[in-house]
Image (tube, rainbow, N blue to C red):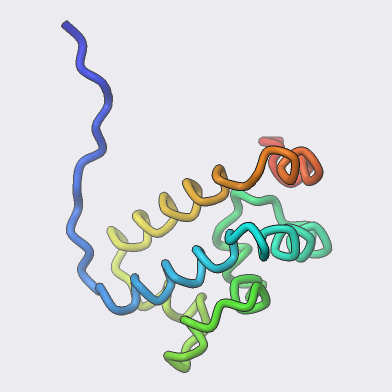
Length: 116
């Protein structure tokens, strides 16, 4: 009998920083903000799965997500504060959120969603 894949639970070490960055990602992918966020990526030539590029271009701040700004740190700085295990979980969270974008909007920005 085969069992389905179950992701291992890894404890978040820096909960406050992780939560602030998580809120910024969630804000960027809200239905009313996702199109603006994707347009910013398109203008900068960043593909949607390039999380490091999104952070370094400060696109999460441009998406109107105040959670990171409230801490006085940019999303990139918050990410750098995280240990590697938390960073990996944040990348996974980001990748899961980009798949929640409405299908019509994903089709409109299909170039950003391409793997190559």
